Structure formats: C-alpha cells, structure tokens
Image (cartoon, rainbow, N blue to C red):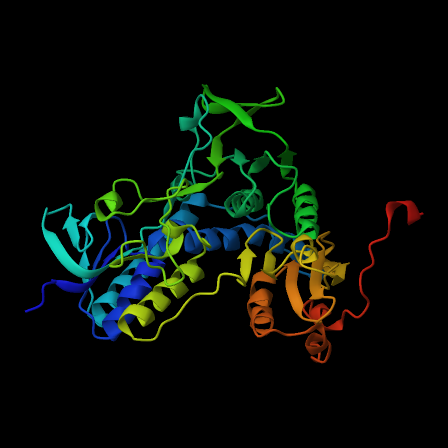
Length: 460
C-alpha cells in the first residue's frame, strides 16, 4: 500500500495549477486540487479575461466616431455599465465551469477549500480539518493586488479585484500606477466615457519597455484626453461628500468618484505554512525555485506568480506543463523566461518580444529599424492615432533581438512575429518575407533603411 493518499496535491486552481493537474493526471498520477475561491484564478476570474472584455467594450466608442468617415450615420450611442458587468459575470461563470469540467474529465479530485502545508508531504484542508499525504505538493496560489504604498485614507482606494464589481461607471476616476494594469484600465475608463487622471511617480509609463513605445503611448493617451500626471504621488485620500479628495505630492487636489490603485502585487504566501516545510520566501514574499520549479524542499514545487519570475498567465501555464512533464512524464523540461512575447491592452495596443533598444545596446552593437505612420483606416475616419513599429537587430549577427509595436492589433501581430523571433530569425529573413498588402504589419518586412540617431548638435 502506498504511504501517500495522492501522488500530487495542487494548491491553487488558477491557470498554472489547473494545467499541471490535468497533465499530471494524464500521465496516470492520482491528483487532488484545492481552491478556496473560484476555479480559474486571477486570469479568468479577476484578470486578463474580464479585463479584455472591458477593453472590447471601451473601444466601441472610437468605432462609432470613426464610422462617419466611411459613410455611416450612427445615432448618438449610449452605454450601460450594468449590462456590461452582468454579461461579463455570465461569461466568467461559464469559463469557471469549463475549468471544473476539464479537471473532472482528467480524473482530478477537486476540493473547494483553502489548503495549508503542514510538512514536506502533508496538506491540511482548512474547511474540514482533514489531512492529505502527498508524494509531491505543487504551490500555484498566484498573487494579489495591494494598496501600496500605505497612505492616510488609502483604504478609500480600490484594486484591480474590486474594479470589476463597481455598481456604476465612475464619472471621474484617478488611476495610480504606470504598469500594465494601470495603463490598461486608464484606457478602458477613458473609452467608456469617464474623465481619467493617470498618476505615476516615474517620468514615463511602462517601465522596462522600449523608450519609443513609452513615449508614443504617453502621447497617444494625451490625445485621448487622459490627464497624465507624471513624477507625482498621492499623499492622502479623504472622503468629501460623495466624492474622494486626493491630495498629490505637488500640492494639487483632485476630486474623483473612484481611486484605482495599481501599484503592485504580492505573492499569496502568507499563512500558507511554507515555513513548516523548511521553505523561506524572499523579500517580495515569493517562493524561490530552480529551473524545474522545485523549491529547497525536494517534494514541493511552485509555479506561476507565486514565484515572481515572469508574472503572465501563459508563462504560468507553460511552467505548470513543464512541471508535470518533468515530475510525472519522465520528460525533464525547463521554461525559457528570456524571450516572452507579451501585449499591453491599452488603446492603442502594444505588442513586444525581446530586448528594448537600450537593453540590446548594453550587449553590443545594434541596428535599429523603425517607422511611425498614420494607419490606413485613419485616412477616412479622421482619427489621429499613429502606428509605431520598431526592430532591434544585432549589428554583428543580423539576428532580430526585439520587435516593438504600438497600434491596432499589436497583440495579435506580436504572437505571430514571436514565432519567428523565438526561432532566431534574422533581419534578412524578415526582408525576404513577402508583405501582405495593405496591412499595417507589412511594415515589419518592408523596413530597409536603418534608423540613424543624429547627435543633437548635428540637428538643424
């Protein structure tokens, strides 16, 4: 008789945990998975999926405006927040059911409860107090948004969890932060008709992205009427009648209906019992793991945002799959975190893979190709958006090190381009690819002249 009740116990029913459980079960493992909230995790319940639905909703306002240039007579549209949220909730409920069915079909036993670790092989089910002995434990509990830094009245703010459940569309909203979440929700609320102020302590949005992308997004948001306030922070929040009064570091005061704080996330490791198994988290609260997602305790692994490596849903899924292949499929697999295509669902959209120009220059000589143009659709619509495309190429090997796109469909484009870059494509490979005309993406294979940075004294 086995000394263990199950071969694998997964704590967390998000994207990484569900994929690991299903694949491990497919290899014949006895798998149990515990989730204390709703199946699907951050991405499905309160992250990428509902956010993208809101992004779609926000872009219709621009479509209505642009239609006139193409001969459409569109009556003044109206928007109903309650309808959007109701339909969004129905879709999320459907997806949660899909996740559950997929686990059941794979033979995974689901436990609807919080689970904590008691030792290297024991998990306690909080709901019942029962204990499960597992040969392998996988921690896939993700992360949560925080109201940081702590300020007087900070509890008046909301996070990306609560924003999906607002009772009404705020007429005025202050978004605090400069990363993915802040940028995306600023675009969402602006598109839906709110007066948006986007506040960021840095000098540009999206730290770590290519400088040209950062500049172009800031300009685009300014054109869309977003009040972009950089190099500032919120000092305090106070309730003022039915509004919230935000005092900023420059002494100015804003009155808004909601304050969305999107300044960071923390791994969900508090109270998980990791110390009982000899595992210490790092300063951010994340679980240190090796390339195979194994912790210092051999029987315990961790994947996804709880490890704070590359906090993206597709990465968590890949890590979960690689874990199952390694531990239960006898196919050791490591995830390469060095080259990850990603999208920011701002409006205009951003798609990126590889190195920024600044990062590439630290490695050696590079050649830059870039173009900025008015998209074909705007010639009749009269819209003032622009598209930016940029290639960062190794000056010695001709290998494409980075692709950076800002414009409509950038996320879809970068997924396809990501295949070529992951395979090691060179600029010559791009050049010999026949363009699809007329598209914006054809610019990626038709740029021939390197961009030359002129010395400021030479300009003129």
